[in-house]
Image (cartoon, rainbow, N blue to C red; front, side):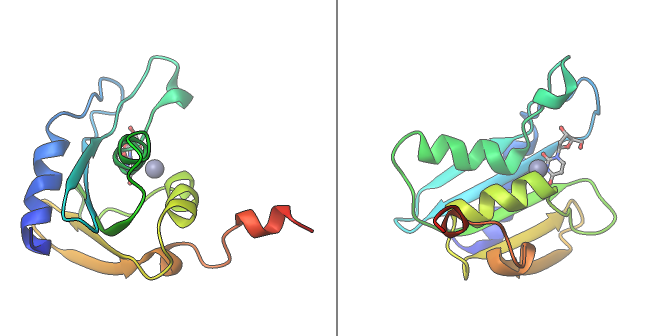
Length: 132
Ligand SMILES: O=c1ccn([C@H]2C[C@H](O)[C@@H](CO)O2)c(=O)[nH]1
Ligand SMILES: [Zn+2]
């Protein structure tokens, strides 16, 4: 599936968002190196800190099925600028995706900010920091 079709996949995933508190729907589409696509949406909870973002939903779905190698993540929300992932997601993405992997941040108008894992979180805390 090409990168622009992936935007449509992220938009479809966004429709499943469970967002009774924020009403802010986010969708993600994560393409594996085999070409499979994992979808994610944000899922909120009455205990607000338990909310899970769309990006992490997609990544955790793939990882939980033993799928760990990706080549594109697309994220979409109804924002003026292409939606910027939160800090928690940047940290998780930086550990679970390769530094040069492409990330396309988009909105419903199809504005696209093409970035990479390493540019989303420069200087990320990493597993290597645990091994002094
Ligand atoms: O990149 C983002 C930014 C926010 N959210 C979610 C978290 C929460 O459910 C709602 C409002 O912050 O949007 C995401 O899923 N991804
Ligand atoms: Zn997030």
